[in-house]
Every structure is written in C-alpha cells, then in structure tokens.
Figure 1 (tube, rainbow, N blue to C red):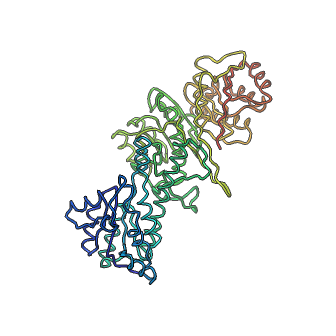
Figure 2: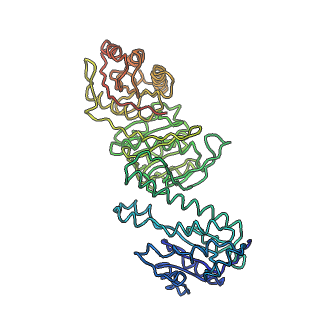
Figure 3: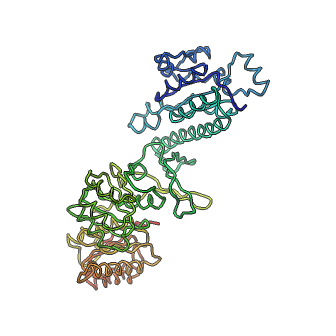
Length: 529
C-alpha cells in the first residue's frame, strides 16, 4: 500500500486557483481526470481530457447540482480497500473503478455568510457531496490521497514528480488528518451559524469553535511553554489576530495577549479624540486622550513611566512621525495601530526589534461575542463585556453632583476601569489616567497603590503635587466599606463613579458627603479576571 501509483483522480473545486497546473501534472503522469460542472469546464478550457462524473455514475447532475457525486460508483471507488479481495470483487461486479486521488474543496459557506447573503443563499452554500467524498477518501487513506486546498497542490505535484506519479503512505496520512480537520471546521462553522445567528442560541448543547492556525509563536507565557495563534475560520472582528506585522522580532504569547488588551481599550475610543493606551502584563498603566496622538502619548506615559518601560502601546489613530519618535524614546515591545504613515514607519525601522502591528481598523467595542477560559475538566463561556454606560444609568447619590469636567473624567475613568484586572481603581484628570491600581485582593489596597503610583510619577516629573489631587475615580465594583472611599478622598479625588449595591452603601455615601465628594452609581459592574 506504500507507495500507491495514481491512475484515476476525481476533482471538484469551488476555488479554481492552481487547478489547471494540478490537472496538467496529473495528466503528465497518466492519471485519468474525472470531474464535475465548472471544474470540468475549466480543465477542458485548458485543453485537458476530462471524464464527466455523470459518465461514471450513469446519472446526470440534478436538483440544481445538489445531487451529482452521491453515488456508489464514486464512493465505492473511494472506499474499496485494494488489499481485500471481497472489496475488489464487489467493485468489479458492479463496474466500479478505483479512485486514487480526490481533490475537493468545499462550497464557500463562511465567505457567503461574511458578505451578508440571505438565508436561502447561505443554505445553498452548505456542501453535502464534498464533505462526503473527502471523508470517504480520508478514511481509506491507505490507498487514497485527499487534497482539500490549493495550498497543498505544489507539495503533491512535487511528490508525484519525484516518485513517478505515486503517493507515499506518510503523505496520505498527513493529508487525511488535514481532510478530517477541514470537514470538522466546515461543519463547525455551519453549526455555529445555525445556533448563534439562525436560532439565536448563545449556549447550544453542543458547541463548536472552528479555528485555523496562523503561526506558531516564540513561546507561551513562559519559555518552556509552546504556543500558537489561531483565528476563527469564519467572520471575525478585525483585531490583533488579523494584524499585519510590519517589522520586529517574532511575537510571543504575552506580546499578543498584551497587544489585544491594549487594542480592546483603545477601541473604546474609536470615535473619540486621539487616544493612547500603554499596557503592561495585560493591565493598562497609562491611558490618555488629547488633541494629538503625541500629546496623548506623553500624558499616558506620565501616569507610570516606570511600568511603561517594555510595555505595549495601542492607539486609535494612524501613527505619525512625531508620535513614533516619542514612542521610541524608551524601550517598547509592541505598538498596535490602525495604520502608520511612511515617516512613522521609518522611525520605527531604526528600532528593529520593536514589533509594529497594523490592524487596518479597530474592533467594535459593543460587538456581540463570547469569551472562553479553559478550566480543569471544562470550558467557561460567557458573553464578552460589551456594557456601555448611558446617561440614564447614572444616579447621583451624594449631596453634591459632579461638575461637567468631573463627569467627563468619571466617564473616562469608568471606561479604563473596565479593562483593568479586578480589584480595579482608576484615578483620572483632564482626560488622562493619574493612577491605576489593579489586581489586588483588597479594593482599598488597589486604591492606595494607585495613589502611590501617582505620587511616584509626580516626583519623577517634578510636579508640586500628584495628579490625583482634583481627580475623578472609578471603581469597577462597589466599595464594600467606607475605608476605600476615605482613601480616595485622602489622595485628593473630588468625584467617584462606582456600581453601588453594597449593604454599606449608606456608609460610603455618608463618607463622601462628609468630605464634599460627588458620587454617582451606575448599577453596572466591570469585574475582569
């Protein structure tokens, strides 16, 4: 069974890329070509001899092409084991000739969905015969080679040329593995569309998540861990997974994880003023909006210049030369942007290890979607946090209402806090973070850490006082005790935004009133773990 000399091939493809070259190579090695519809027409147009599937089955294509290859003459030719006399006798008795190679891609279901086609068109692009032939040939890979994508043609042609028109068992096994993965991903995409979009089921009984490999990575969270990047096989929001790497070293798992965290936060300001986000270990360490990107970068960096060293930066505007020059003044791992002009690219080129990722667009922060987390023995699935603060949600609970300037900073701080690991506290002033406390077991500790960071930044910059003085503060969840609110006031904040809902809300509100703070409740929590 190793090697197998090809005598007969069945070709039926939607994507005609490379088809004629493959057909010519097969013909050169004396392989009979059997084909269907448009594939046969393309081969004939190139001057290649082709046998129609209808001539093999004795039945014409019918029902708008739905029925053409679902026939024993096709599947018997694919499934017959050449080493079993009973199989070969049955094939001979029924006039079934072996098929040694099947070249089939599948109807463009995902592309049809992506272009916004109607339901009837989507259903018609569910392939039936293609997966059946692929699975038949792949099951019988001891004798049959299965090719499912144009990217595989060159390797097959090279092997045929080297082996006198034969395929080796190792190749057939590898192609079989790829074939079953292809049909699994295809069926998974169909099942996902039916459950999520046709039936509006967020959590179906059987969940599918077809993805394809983009690249292996330098390593995972640590050098001893292997890692890879996969993206959905169907439509996906434009993001880090689809970004073009313009320059820089190979990416690691942590690079991409931090880049995603930075981009998701920058995307919250996709329709706002120029915004810069600096992330370290998946937490923002500086965020700012300003009239220009370079001003926003300077303000974001000032929040915590120590943590920003070796960080990841994302912006909501195409990069310009001035911003690029400012970013390269300290060591930065990754910069993510929707675009960059030639002058900015030239500046970054001088820092050859810096990775520059261009996304072409920003993801919609309000988009639907699911997030997953692997746990021991299972998978946690939830809707992504697409919660957006509205005016109707804001409830002033103190005697003093926030001023317009305070309210603007409260909104800004609230957006940033959504992307900070819990427990999260964010001080903001004039559209820039002043201090960020992240990932602490105690909320009051996050409050104090953020204030301490602000004091350190003030000393480094030579300011007379930290920027927490006169700032607005966001807490991703309620203050369980008044001590957190007291710590906020001691840092100089004048306004607070938090979800509320604690059994001690009255104590927290009283502490705010006693100190003249304005406070609003949102009744929305933004835990992030």
